[in-house]
Each structure stands twice: as structure tokens, then as C-alpha cells.
Image 1 (tube, rainbow, N blue to C red):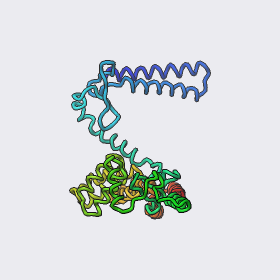
Image 2: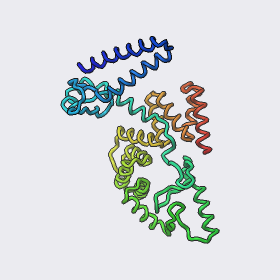
Image 3: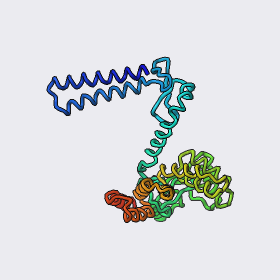
Image 4: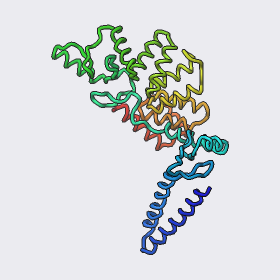
Amino acid sequence: RTCQLHNIERAVILVHMNVEAAKMKGSDNDEVVDAVGDVIHYLETEAADKMCCASCGVAEVDEIKLNECDDCDLVRYCSDKCQKDHRSKHEAMCKERAAALRDEILFRQPVSSHLGDCPICCLPFPIDSRQHKGQSCCSEAICKGCSHAHKLQQLQQRQYPTCPFCRHPVPKSQEEANKNMMKRAVANNPAALSGMARLYYNEGEYERTFEYCTKAAELGDAMSHYNLSLLYVWGYGVEKDEEKEWYHLEEAAIGGHPEARYDLARKEGRNDRFDRAVKHHIIAANLGYDDSIQMLKKCYKYGDVSKEDFAAALRAHHAAVDA
């Protein structure tokens, strides 16, 4: 490739020039390293701006735009034809890189669980779902402490019960609450869509459950991704599909769902990929998931996790539980 060889030659010349210039000034080793680093930064910028088509070798200029591979960020192409012609040579490397990129996202520690924070006190919700309650009027979840404080205030002022967040009157019946939730679902609120899916599941209408879970999952709702994985396991409202089950488990885990993370760890363990299983358990334990910290104790007992990693997971678990 003409442009690739040109880049290599230019790299050698620039590195040599910067090193010699640094030596002539009497610079120490650190300054020489900095000079080389400046060159590398320059070349990286140039490579991003003027990269070559992996198939035909043409460089990107004003009239030629290069597009990245659909699955990885290793190569770019000037046309669909070039991408198709180069597929056989690039396929193995592409799959390996795509898997690495996926793992990079999958094993990244979420800032908080999929439950998020209370919108009133801004404290993270505990993993225990009994410690917070969703409101049908605004589809916001409120922690138990804020709900209790709001009720006390209303009792003292002899006010009619309202939502702690939006101040909408509390529904007088479950039917009215369901109507409120349906309005929010029509507006494509993920929490309301997930609530409607749960409602239809309890009524045994699994196809409608699948429909609402899919809509909520498309909007990024981690709980709906987890529920979809269960539907694919059981075959409720949809045909059983292990590949899709695994995909939705991973999406839920990426979204901070600790139980999905725990299920992934068990699956990896059954496939004898214990290093991946331990990573999943550590992430779930850091979110405050008790079952994962118990599994890490067993892993530590049998030497599958180091003392340092186990101690760090214990501290993070305690901090998440006490938050």
C-alpha cells in the first residue's frame, strides 16, 4: 500500500529527527521520550484524518470518504464493493476485535445499578426492591425514606395524598393507577412500558408481555432486557432462543442489572470460563448483590480469585449496601 509505506517512512524520519534534536540540546531521557511521544501523537492524528482503504489502498481526501467497518474499528473502506472484496481477509480479525470491544463494554463497572437514584434525595436505590416504589402518575420511583417523609408532611398539614415527586393526586383504585401507567406507556416511558409488561405477564398474556418488554428494551431499560432473557428461556410468548437469551442478559448486565450479571457468571462457570465468571461476580458484588459476594467467597476458598480482588470486592459490597 503506497500511503501505508509513506506513513511508515515518515514515522521513522520524524522520530529520528526529534530524538537527535533532543540529544543536541542535552536533554535527558525523559525529554527524549516526550519528543517521541509528540511524534506518535502527531502520527495518530494523521492516521485518523488520512487513513487508507483496507482493500484498494486509496487515501481519504476531499472527494473520497472512508467508512469504518460495521463491526470493528480496525479498518476503513472507500466503498461497499471494497468492503465486500476484503471481507474474506478481514473476517477473522474483525470477529476477534468485535468480541474484544464487546467484552470491554460488558466488563466495565457500572456507576450504579439499573435502579438508579431517587429523584428527590439523589441517593442510589438499594438492590432490595422493597425499599422503593414506582409512581403510576409520573413513572418515577421514590425511595422509602422520601415517601415516608412526604406522608408525614401531608398528615401534619392535613393535605390530600399526592405523589411525592409530581404532586399528582394518588389514584383511588388499581384501575385508575393502571390507566395512569397506560398514558405514560403511550408516551414511550420505559418504566411505564416495563410496568405494562409486568401487568400483562400476571394476566398470562405473554405475547403482549413480550411486545411491551421489547419496546422498553429498545429504549434502554435494563429490567426489560432481563425479562426478555427469561421469556426466551421459558418460551413464553416467543420461541426459545439461547443466543437471544444470552444477548439480553448481557445488555441487562451492561445496564447495571446485578441479577443478570449473576446469571451470566453462572453460565460462564458452567462453560468452564471461570475467569469471566469471577469478573461478573465482582461487578455484581460491587453493586451490592449478596449472592455474588457469597460466590466470591467460594471462589476465594478454591483459589479462583486473588486475595486483593476479593478484599476489594468485599469493601465495595459493604459500601454499596450501606449507601
